[in-house]
Image 1 (cartoon, one colour):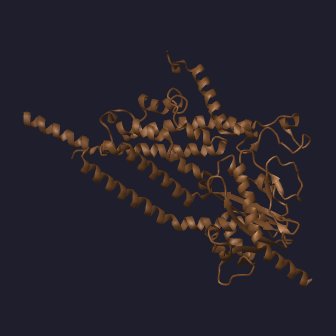
Image 2: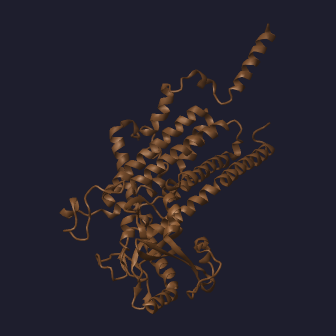
Image 3: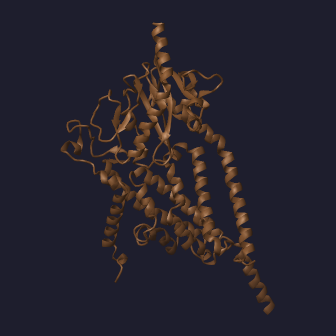
Length: 247
Length: 250
């Protein structure tokens, strides 16, 4: 009798090992359960990587002068973060603890190179637009942060959702900041002159510029990105009281 | 096996490195022909774009100058290619299109090759000269098309490897490149190119060898100024010969 129980237990264990890519809890959970949905929605607001965790500020300063590159960067980060999270999650039981950061770097760097090479061959024009940003993805603190904090301890599906969610939360802030910087700094959105055309003289100008409006050149410089991020954080906390720390 | 033992870490690293190396290098090798083809087509597109603009007019119809169209029609318009030495004499047996300016720039002036493309479009001749220089972060390059007088700029194309988006990278935008149209490269008897000037007050003056700079892109703008002058002045001997021969024909 006891032998039998031992056998079934062993069989069960084997089965668990067979389902290498799924954790036991994941088996029972539906793919988009409430907890999984939270993985997607949390980083957009309550746990936003930029405004709450204050990660990835560097790229939020560097590439938010215009909307278009900000959006392209966001899409690229979504891809790299989701894939990186999945790969690290699959490897999480194999990676030696002492060199895990190196392994994470190698995975992220490889993915970035794959993206870069494929874009250069098949989407040359997009690749030209991205140029330096592709390389910058490697240094994005959010990616390393999520690999370390989430993917190393969770299954691939959850990690995938977590990657998408965090990259989207990052992209959201990037796009908001870029919107204000492009609008106020150069009077354009997606390169279109939405505030009218600024001619060399007042007579040649149209729209707001004809009334004597001037672009604020300060918005083109990085410090203004920090201030815009600060205003976003302020607004977010005034609306979402949970985020206010108690002293 | 203990995941924290030195031997495990060693084996893991070796396997990881080999896997990554094999995957990335085979991917790069597999995609290389397509990438080089893209680069070749883009070069043709850039050369044509300097004097054609965004769309090609063939038999009264206007076709967008895509990379594919450009590589197909390149030989119809670019009739002569020169690989010049610093004295303006043509070097035999050198394919101007294959000359890589990045490598030429490292050589002493006497050994450099200066490519020049002579093209005809809608009954007019243009001379296209490739440029290359340094921006803020990395290389910048471009092409400038001169009209028959070898002085007036028909059009320019600029590109860059890593200038800041929204600042230095603005040199690739139409409004910046259009400001060079009709500017002159000669000042008196010497070639000075076109200066990218901060606080430019000249308006639409095309005779002052200067255009308005981009806010927040001073170093990249200076790079464009330097690149224009440095590269173009080496063609002076060739230009003079050309002008002489034209006078002689008349």
